[in-house]
Length: 260
Ligand code: HXC
Image 1 (cartoon, rainbow, N blue to C red):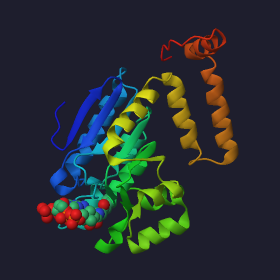
Image 2 (image 1 turned 30 degrees about the vertical axis):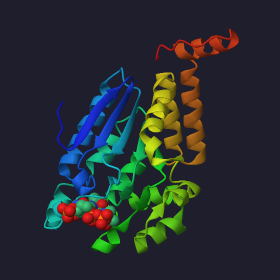
Image 3 (image 1 turned 90 degrees about the vertical axis):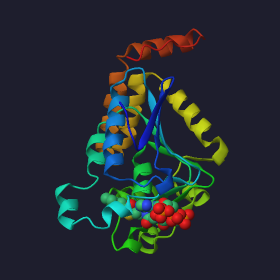
Image 4 (image 1 turned 60 degrees about the horizontal axis):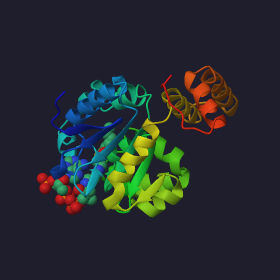
C-alpha cells in the first residue's frame, strides 16, 4: 500500500504511522483522512501487529488542525453532504479494536487535538501544545473536540479552551488528565514505540478486552459498564492465554502467549 500524506512502518509487532505533511504542520486534509482509514484498517487486519503509534513528522507539530486552505472555499453543502471527517469515527475509532497510542510531538490543534484524543491514550512531548482554536476561524470543533476534550478534562477547562482558543501546554494537559505521560521530545518516539511494544506483547484477547471495557465507561451507565466488564472478564477465563498466564505465574516462569 503506498501513501502520499502518511508514512507507515512496521517495527516488530508495532505499526508506526507518521502524519507527513511537515511544511503544512501536518494539517489534515481529505487525503490524510482517507489514507489514515486505510492504514488503520491494514494494521487491524494484520495478525502480526499488536499496537500502533501515530505521530507527526518534524519537531513542530503532531497536526495543526484540519487543512484550513482546503476548507476555506469549500461550500457548506459539501461539508454536509460529504459528512466531513465523519469517517474517522466510523471507520477508524469504531473499527480499530487493537490498541493505539498518539505520540504528540508538538502542536495538536483543532482536528489535530481531536485526532490525538481518538487514540487509546496520548503520550506528550514536553513541547506539546493542545488546543481547539476553531472559534478564531468562525467555526467550532467538528470531529470530537467538544465531546472528548470535555470528557477528558471536564467542563471548565474544555469550555474555556473552546471559547478562547487558548493552548494548553504538556504539564497542564497531564495534570488535567488529557495525556497519560510527558516525555522529553528527544525521547518521545522511542518511549512510544517501547510502550507500544509492551502492549503488543500482551495476550491479544486480553488487550482488546481491556480496551473495550475502559471505553465502555464512556458509553454506558455504571451498572451496564460493570456488567460488560464482568462478562468480558468471564470470557477471558476461557482463553488459552488465561490458562497459560496463571500456570506460568504458579510455576514461576515466563508465559508463552498464543494470542487466543
Ligand atoms: C493549513 C496550515 C495549518 C492548517 C499551519 N499551516 N496550520 N495549513 N491548515 N491548520 C501552514 C501555514 O499556512 C504555513 O504554511 C505552515 O503551515 C507553517 O505555519 P505558520 O503559521 O507559518 O507557523 P507558526 O507561525 O509557527 O504558527 C504555528 C501555528 C499556526 C500556531 C500552529 O500555524 C496556526 O495557528 N495554525 C492554525 C491552527 C488552527 O487554527 N487549527 C484549527 C483548524 S480548524 P505556508 O505555506 O503559509 O508557509 C480544524 C477544524 C476541525 O481543525 C474540524 C473539522 C471537521
